[in-house]
Length: 312
Image (cartoon, rainbow, N blue to C red; front, top):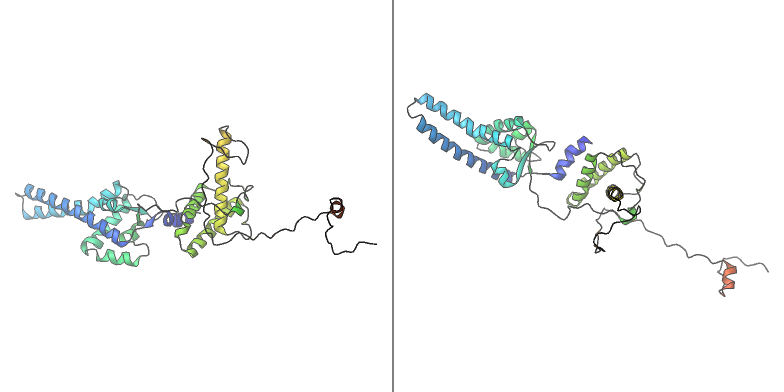
């Protein structure tokens, strides 16, 4: 469970930043840092005019380390991974597990940034970002961090889709008390973004989530029910139970299947069923009921043909 949340929760909830946006954020940060460095250098040059050359060189090195190395480390630590450039580009530095960074993460990133960005003019950082699958430079690899996109355009898949009609109410007897909140969060994140995933990746993720849910509930996955549809049906069942519990506790609930009406009749909103990669099972037509011969003769109708000849 922890492996699933650590891996897929970050992939679903946060998107790794690409090289162009990261490069723009670094350029903004370097421009601000160099502007501050020049201002500090001018002030120190005026203040140390009466000192010898060794003292002036020492002050220059100290100001360089303080502004261009210590400044970014302090800013990322205090802002939890949001520097001025990253804030402008909608980026943020997080840990591999999605949590906020601390001083040690910012320190490793800043120390490696001196070699990757300042000493080599960003060549090493660009090569490392292009080679990495998630666009990480060496500082991110050694610090265990990742630069992600914090501002993501909201799409139509921000809601939990409804399950197929033939699965509604099928899991009413399922015990959901042992399912942790982290698994519910991962399932909801998958359902809201399954339309944005590659079909093979989404199918594999649905199988893993369904396996974890089956392990928590103790009930096997019904035969012939796809994993995505199973997850959607169980999530809807959990939401229905929470609604019934809330209205029953407030004294406004009617029956088990009753739905409260607030402010008069509500407009009917058409629900578009999502594509889960399967179709509902075919319902075979049933034969019409057979009328007994005695009843048919009493009503003046011809008795139905049964294939048997009545005795003489």
